[in-house]
Image (cartoon, rainbow, N blue to C red; front, side):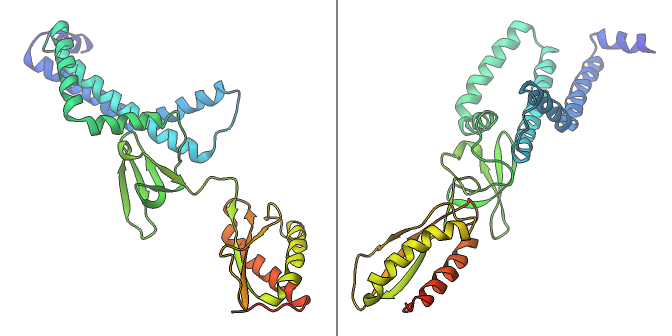
Length: 267
């Protein structure tokens, strides 16, 4: 039976060509089906080559998606080229591939740009799956990344499909050294001389009282104006991602200390 199949494979008849083409694309489809498993193996080998350094789970998921996409594209591209090689000579095939590449490059430059940018994501790390980012003035959480597109889930629930080639500026809200926890106070102008030293001392104490506060706050006046009341801004730095949570704690701490010293906040 095996000898008959091999004989059919090598016999130059139309149905043997059809058999070869079907086998090639079936093999490409199988590679596609196992592309995620193959990507896993590649990433594990890469981790071993880095002497056991652990990769962030988000980065691992992003690279896994990119590698799976690349493996699928290469498998079907190889199937197409091998199929053409069944019908044309090698010299003609090289000429056809070159001509097609030139025409495709002129007619599909945005598509090529998408794929080249996607390939660059394999080496660069602008964002990962799960990061909150802003791409093309659209904010959302990255759900999936492949060689051609990045899928972004917006705060209102829509799924945005962003071509990689159009990504020029990335604003990543999930990475940073600190988050701002700025608060604003309004005081009577007559209380300002007494309030400044109290706030300066409290800023140093707050670092010990609130572990998520990175350093003593700075006291500034953004408007620089004074009438019956004045406005002070406390520039505080919280641990990254903790800014919104820290503001009410800072407000409560400042309000309590000012009340202890007899200083009332104004509206």
